[in-house]
Image (cartoon, rainbow, N blue to C red):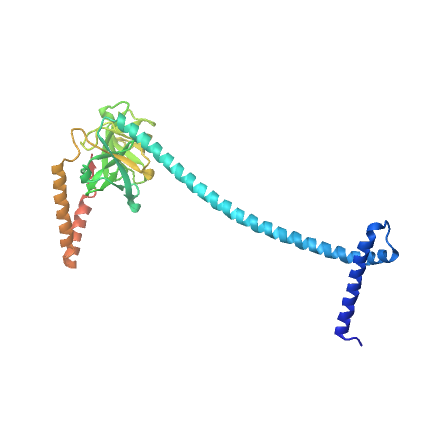
Length: 332
């Protein structure tokens, strides 16, 4: 019985002989046109093995090349994806700058054409629970802003200053339901078409003009502007467009549903309006506001020291007063 070592030596010997014969054939074949019988037999025997080895090596080579190409394409795809993301970011920034530039140009043009003294301001915050009621602008009494000054954009009336601090002010928007603005139809300006424009609770973001005379000429598509009555808003500030006219519940007066000219959910830049005959705050008035503001800060510090029982009692008294006066609306 042959040992494994003997078998291995026998196989190696056969392979060496075949290798020797192939080399010999390659050397002697250069000057001959035909192969010998032995050469033909050897080549016929070896060629399938050579073909299998060549095919396998070719497949391995193709697989390696395919793998390398896949890795390259994956890296290139990641690079292009990152580049595309950067381009999209730049494109979005450019579009934002373009839109801001357009708004500022429109506002600058409006300021140049306006008959009022205007101070530009930027919206820096708004109350999310009262989206259509109040906003905060980045101008305060240090900049000459005072309570009740009108706030507008190039589109129309926004509201008025509710309270001021050093470098910021709270603005009560036109759409607040607890305030009313005296308005009239822009085209006619008849006294009979004057009514009170207030925020419409049933349609947030819209206004309703009430107490309009039955004889008043007011129709869908009419533009409503501030009448100037009340002294807070200068006359002629655009409030919005009438989209519906109807009768009140008693049939004695008319009402008009108004779509505001200003897009309150997209407010970014506004103007503070100097009312007719008014000036922005003088140095003396600013000092007065500073003094009041300091007193308020001192009072807030004092309030923090008030016992809880007294604080609760004071809040209950204030709430009782508010409940009694909730329907007393300001006519501005």
